Length: 413
Image 1: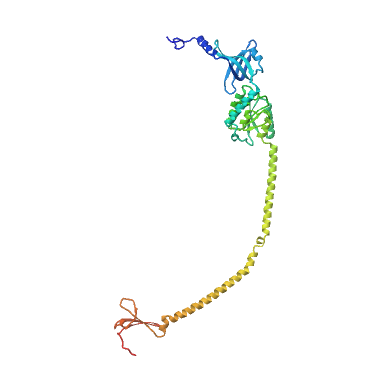
Image 2: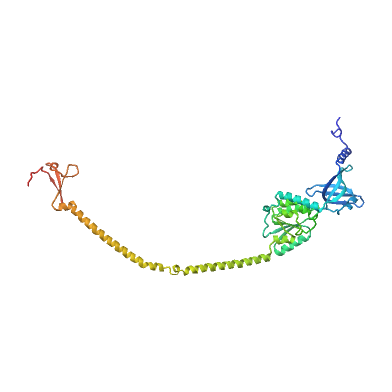
């Protein structure tokens, strides 16, 4: 036979399970727990106080019960959002099957402890690079729509909208009102931040609230909110508290403003100042243009006053006579050279004529050539080359005649 609760034939009754769970939980012993009060219920006719304790860094909560006197005699006023440390024993109520922590002591978290925890979180986020200046997104010069996250009807909302509208009347706002302190602040702010970051017309997001104590500003040092700001693609401006206040969201945001009014001045340009700047730039540019024209005109005047530009043909005229003289000398030298060369050619021609065969023929000599059949004429060198019957060609000064050789003749001399 199986043990009780190990088979459908032998199940545990409800009371059996409840009693066993209560026994297991009862063995855990008392523990110290830190959290933020999300809800406190004090019923008029009951001596038991019911508290919901929330973890600020996670979406988790725990139910507490304690005697009414423990709440009324606590060292700090117990309200929603109060950070406390409680000492209690886990308890399982078998009648309803619910778990709670039976609290016997409540202590307030000191300011020093809060600041130390904020400093530890600051070092953690800094080590992860969330404060790196290279990750800061630039604020647009003239945002069309400003997303504003702040408390309902708060002074911060009035200051930002009034100052920004006075500086640039055409500016538009998308206001998301949330609680800015207490246990519900972080979830509402994160939800509004995500909605504005996803809005296509929102150019910059401002997270604003007035001053307050360290406990009041604690949501703006929450790790969840800081990481959500770092994930935004829209530039985020932190305007929390006054100048001395420095929650962690100031370090993560793309721009920290000392006050909400300072945020309005830093994200929206002043119409009057911008118009004055435009007028001043126009005057300065006009003056600079006039000065440039005057300088260029002075430079042109100086260039035109130089002789080479004032009388550009003077240099050519001064060289004209020199050019004419050079041309006459060149022509004279060329003519003389032609005359000398002509005389030399004439002398050479005369010498050539004197030494040539034509002059010899003119003196009565003749050139006799043998004309062989089908061959080229050859100069007659010997009588042996002209036997009887050989055809001869006789060239004289005024022409040539042909003859037939009769052989070697007797010497007539």
